[in-house]
Figure (spheres, rainbow, N blue to C red):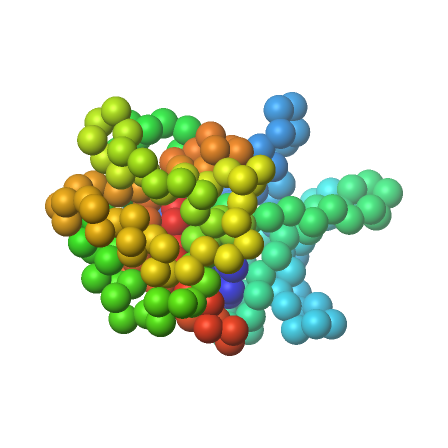
Length: 213
């Protein structure tokens, strides 16, 4: 996740009219563990932006304060999250953007297959394709039609492929009707994601990345 991606999350919160006076917390996704509040934002020695939750301080930053702190570092820096316990021990966490356990959730964006293929047509077909949610990276392992007639791109860590070229997905999608709805599913977390091909990017290695949330 880049600082630009995180700023976009704040923009979406603003457009959804979320109360700026509310605390922004990160959920570890672990039963019995309280969400983490952000107590600090700083630039580390590697030039990456660290969102820090230090339980030894009572200072909690508001969403507006976090957004302002992140913006000062530009839009191209890598962002990560660290929790610090009472003993000063640090633990690094991934930042997940979106995802839902509910296949029928109104927040799960469905797009047409043609929306995805139209964006991928302009990419080098031998480029490695990735899907990303925050700092979590996914690779497609299988493509199938679900019980509702929608196309599902599924990721499974056990079956993960090292290199999944754009051409492989284009071949899989060529058999589907252009208007067919499509979404992303992570089998490990059992979560569904909408696909946002308009947020496609290419990294320095020529790999293609598409946001899901």
